[in-house]
Amino acid sequence: MAELTITTFVSLDGVMQAPGVPTEDTSGNFLYGGWVFPLADADMGTIITGIFGKADAFLLGRGTYDIFAAYWPRITDPNNLIAVKLNSLPKYVASRTRSAFTWNNTLHVRDVEKEVIELKKRFSHEVQVHGSAGLAQTLIAKDLVDEYRILTFPVVLGTGKRLFGNGAVPRSLKLVRSSTTSTGVVFSVYRPAGALKTGSFALE
Image (cartoon, rainbow, N blue to C red; front, side):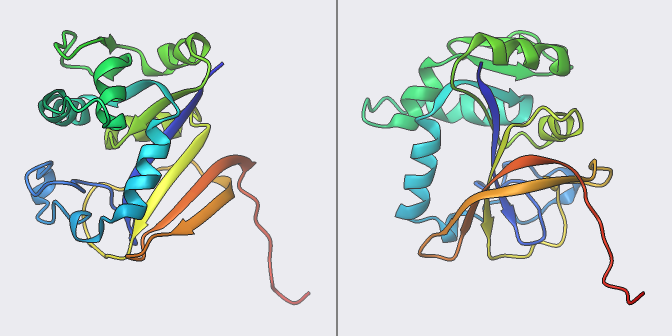
């Protein structure tokens, strides 16, 4: 059975909105789109390529799907692993407003909680989520994520959609591994570790 993994870029204050392009997602009057670009380097490319190499299928929110579908079909280089994977592998889009999608091998997901469980049974390696801020909130809330791959950039944005937003269910995570790119981006891999544990340093 496949694992469901989330890969996302976040700022130091947890914002994941519009990392790649200024006009990617301006909802909420977000003004800082494209904040990842100045810190992208070969190390980051190696990390992302390695992640895509593990994919059996992709689960995307509609906004991220639209961004990917407008870009990746235009990349036809057979040596570009990310393009090859995205253009050929099954893609499942969680959407309440659309049910038809034209990008090769794309299907609609209507009931995320129910259908994700079935998707995981259908594949043997990974069903990957990239970006997809709204979808991520649902997956986190329903405890459907097997592994988080978070690239934390040394920037503070102060506003925007966050990976762990208000109302996130308190839980513990285990750090599996971590590394740092040449530009100071911290790549961390976490797995769920059960309920949140608390204690006290107070003197008795």
